[in-house]
Length: 267
Image 1 (cartoon, rainbow, N blue to C red):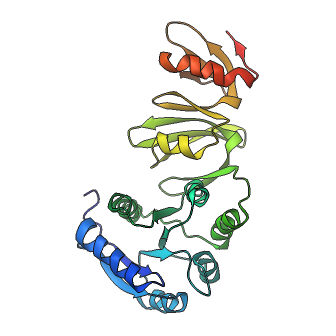
Image 2: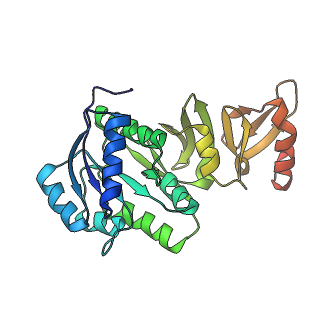
Image 3: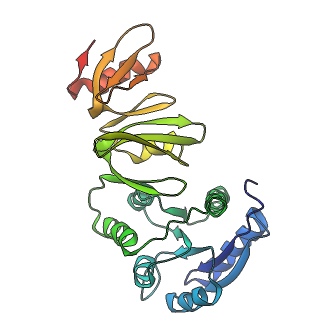
């Protein structure tokens, strides 16, 4: 397993005792027997005591608990100095909000592969010493989004040691690098980029489908940023920022149909 030499110290927090036992079993028997489960808590009051006692690297935290949900709990004890993996049975909208806010989560019923990916990401963060110590705002924002189902228009890009909050409209394109991606975006009217651990297929799912189009297996573009279309032996699009992005021949016709309502100029 990647980063197997990194030892995780974790707490499990869920009001259902059986859910905690199940998570512990999967973590130790199917993911990594060397994970140190420092404690189990079945309420936020108990969790607070355990956090003070153990100072874990990360917590696996159920969202819906009696008396105080996970977001309210994290807001109350902020700033936090541990990573959080939400364990949730929430719906598709909430999952999208988690992804857009770069929040780690696993869905109930727990998938071994999802849990394994979450553990790998935790180990990477520890190895790179890239903790993002959240204050009130991060969890207040995501809680607000989920509870009010407000329109999502920003994404949190989490790199090795920083987080960028970027409006959808400021994203130029996403380029694939295997299972990772590099996102190009405007920061203060200058093109910046960030290497992230999400695959391009995940960005295709997260970003609004009325604006973003996968023009190539390695490129997802913001069609509002298209300036010109080049139709030749190797089709491409020119973005407002000056970058030329290749378009696969088999996706070219579909892209033209998609762009019919967009203000572009054919070259």
